[in-house]
Length: 321
Image 1 (cartoon, rainbow, N blue to C red):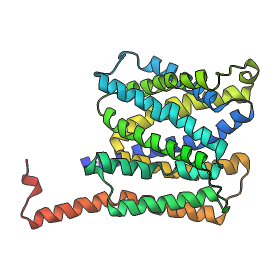
Image 2: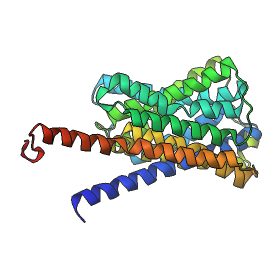
Image 3: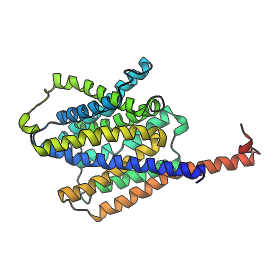
């Protein structure tokens, strides 16, 4: 197989791994719902799953204690907040004030938020017009999947603001991972994110509500079973794989894969909770896939146009140093 073929195959493997991460994260809504119904609080779920993930990451990565500079260490602290404590708190709190549909749609704006931030901080990675159109089409498909035949949206300023905040925090997390992902091993970054995520949630337990440690709740097989799944697979496994993939695939492409989360959630809800899939949801999936195909096309078109312009200007790419 030639070099181009190997690169293409490598990209496909990374994309499949990214989709698997998103599929697992889609299931976490069901697991979290089970834990909430058995008496656990959102912040408690976050602590248990991140604590398990952190201990496992310490076993995998313990040679380096700190980053090479205080700026990088500060960025890791921010990543622990944006991709950990603040993200999970705002998302779960949003569900208390707004409907699940509202929250799912607004959190689904993460790829759009990420594209906006990229255009501000990294001009060379701005999305083309066709990519922007594809992203908007994919978002429209996400909305149809989430609504699933129910045109019921209840606007709530507090809940909707919290959901948008969650979307924005993950977008910032992705941008910071783009920077540190090229400087440090994914295991080191992932371990630090879990550690700082746990540290930055402490003020919540001091100022708002104490951490609940109930033996009666934790002794239930369904509770610790879901906690193990969230901690070891959804947190440790998926964060590690995602942090490794993101710098290689690129922020735009990897983040846009998050659009598929609504589809996986719909499928899982149908299988586990018996929810009905409507024609609107099926149409939404088709629109979503079409939008993502547009997102992945423009770079090739852009390169071909650049090559054509170079040839017109008498520039031979092969002769350039």
